[in-house]
Length: 211
Length: 211
DNA sequence: AGGCAGATAGTACGATCGTTCGTGCTATCT
DNA sequence: AGATAGCACGAACGATCGTACTATCTGCCT
Image 1 (cartoon, rainbow over the protein chains, first blue to last red):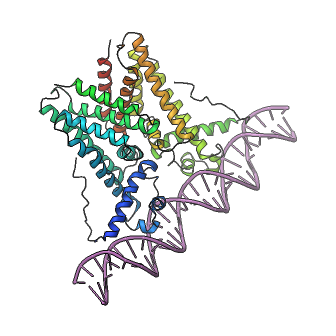
Image 2: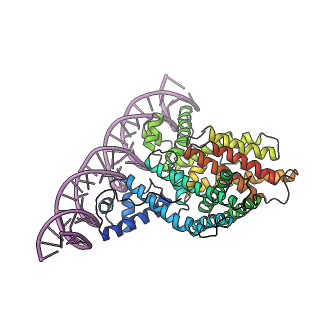
Image 3: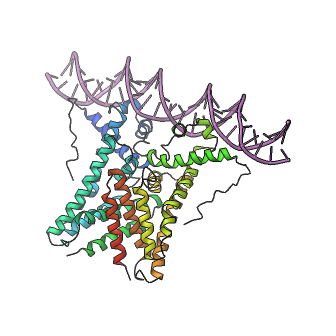
C-alpha cells in the first residue's frame, strides 16, 4: 500500500504558494464533504460556498468535475494513509501489526476523521455501478487496502504467529468485512457497540488461527 | 421481520386498475434504478424516460420526490422479503434456516435481483449521513433485518444446535458483516470469489458455535 | 522593477432538477 | 348513459447543475 499515484506534476504548469494552499483547502473540504453528500452529489457551488470561495475561482483549479473528484480521492487516500495505515504499521510486525491496523481503522471511524465514516466504503458503494476513471481509482485503492491486509496476515504466518493452514486471503476478507460492518452500523445508527463487536470478532478470528 | 408498513390506504382516494399497474411499474423500476443511480441521484425525468411515461404523469402518483423514495423503499423491501427472507424461512428451523437465509441473500446478490447489489446496503450507505424520514425508513428495515438474524440465531440456540454461550447479537453481527462484505466486493469488482468467501466464513462461524 | 503567469471573481450559457398547472381522456360507479 | 374522478399529458416555473469566457489582481522570476 503506497505508491498511490504521487502528486505527479506532469504538466509544466507552475504553482503559486497561495494557489497551492487554496487547492489543499478545497481538496480537504471535498474529501470530507464527499462522505456526506457523495462524490457525485457534492456540487461545485456548494463546495465553493463551504470554503468561502467563488465557484469559478474554485473551478479554475481543476479542468472538470471529474478531475476534482480524482484529486479528492487522492487526498482522502493520503488522509487514510496518515490516520490508518501508518499508525497500524507502527506496531511491531506480526499479529500486533494486524491488530494495530484494524484498531486504527476503527479509531478513525470513531473519531469521525471523515464525517460520513470510511471515505472508501462510502465512495465504493456510490460508484460500484458507474464504471469510469473515478470508479477505477476508488477500486484501485480498495484493492491496495486488501493487499495490505493480506500482506500483514502473510507476515504473521511467516513469523509463525498465524497458522500456515490459514487461508491468507480468506482471513483478510473476514477482517475487512468486520471493519466495514462496524463502519456501516456506526455511521447509520450511531451504534458504538458495533465497533466493539468488530473488535471482538477480529480478536476471535486472530485467536482462531493463532499458531 | 414483517409488518413492514402494509400498503395502508390511509387516504380515501380510490385507485383505478390502470393507475395501480402504472404505479407498480414505476416503483419496480425505481427500486432497481436506485441501486444504480442512488435514491437521490435517481431523477424523476430519467425514471419517466426509463419506463416510457411523461414526467408529470409519473409525478402525479406521488406528492413529492420524498414520497416516491419512501414508496420505492417499501417496494424494495417486499422484493427483499420475496427473494431473501421468505426462501430462507422455508428451510427447517434451526441452523439450516440460518444457513438458508444467508444463502438466499448471497443468491439474490449473485442473480442481480437489484442491478447494484443489495438495495438496503446501497441505500444505507447513501443515506447514513442524511437524517430524515427516508433515512429512517431504511434504518428501520436494516434494524428489522438484524433482528431477524438474531432471532434465527436464538432459535438455533433454543433447539440446542448452537451453543448457549454464543453471544446472539455478536454472531448475527458477524454473519451480516460477511454478507455485506461479499455484496460490496461482488458489485464493485465483479468478484464472485467474495461470495464463496462469505459462504466459507459463515460455515466456519456456525461450526465454531455448533453445540 | 517590470512583466508574466497564475489566482480569483463575475457573468452567462444550456441542461436538468423537482414541482405546478391546466386540459383532455377513460375506467368505473350509479 | 351520464356523471365522477383518477390518469396521463405538455408546457412552463425558478433553482441549480457543470462549464466557459473575460477581467482584475498579485506572487514570483528575471
